[in-house]
Image (cartoon, rainbow, N blue to C red):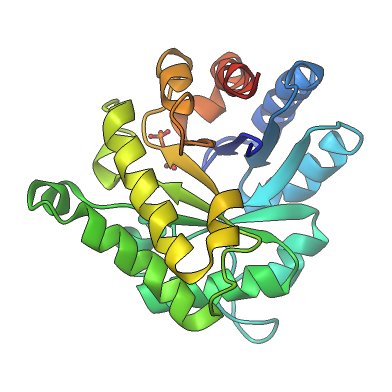
Length: 255
Ligand code: PEP
């Protein structure tokens, strides 16, 4: 049985006082998140604050929203995987669709970042997913498997031994229109099968999260599916009560 994982991606939102109150509200509920791993991913500039505030809070750890494809050096504005790890991040979101579409990250760059996170001893969370046009053209499977394949090409057959995949249909992100549990389950199954072709053991233990308009109301039904091992949460992770509700839904899925 895979342990469910719920991750909150705050994106570029909040200020110091917002981060502090969100962290303390979620941390206050941490003892009720039994059987579930919870990760919060604040903007890089608040990682120190988050690590300090979550210091002794069992069950909630920090993640980075992104890491550089480069190692330390003359790369103005970048944050290396080693730096994120040094700030206490145990996870790193890699290849979020906003990075791919707004900042031009190719499959190759995403794979480099994935490799950097692994080398820094973090768990990379590879985001994959199709656009609305790709979905309409029935290319979802092809797109998602290409994104996974690019990581295998750079990191080898053991790439997903210590990693997470987040299936995030681009059309579902921030739209209020989540994939149906059946739709998401089918893609998650395709992802697991593709990883199994390279490495059956890694596939069996791989946590595959669903992301895209997850709310407390739809989380339970999504997380109940055989290959949906939790969620990557955007908007709802900025409202403590909503995020806690989603973490609780994951607890019920694990019970
Ligand atoms: C995301 O951006 O990863 C995401 C899932 O956003 P939302 O939950 O707001 O759809």
